[in-house]
Length: 166
Image (spheres, rainbow, N blue to C red):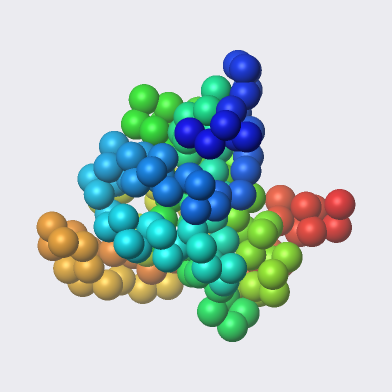
């Protein structure tokens, strides 16, 4: 872990993920998502200024992350991961809100993502944050599962709106 990001102990800290966090992102991806991206994909994600990436670290360990891609006025959320033994503690919501706020501050008016149709925990999180299902991508995932296309207007999310004005 990069020495400048280590903390003695205590609460989680939001941070901007940079290429220094490459190995930690790959490792969390393996544990939480089963290896969604290759090392080269992660390197691109962490080095491109049009691809915001935020994380939560605790005691030098990356425990949650969220990445997106800014395309014109839309933030396309490309990855969300939470350490498996830390799920259902609000960490995903914190990362998602930080990513949405960052996207809005960089000009995004909308946000979109795909989520596995069977991933009820993620669907509940996204709905609680203001996302609505806009369509389905059949057999989108490697295992053949369908993806729900979720979409939201960032201005409609009170948490994002409040953060933009503070």
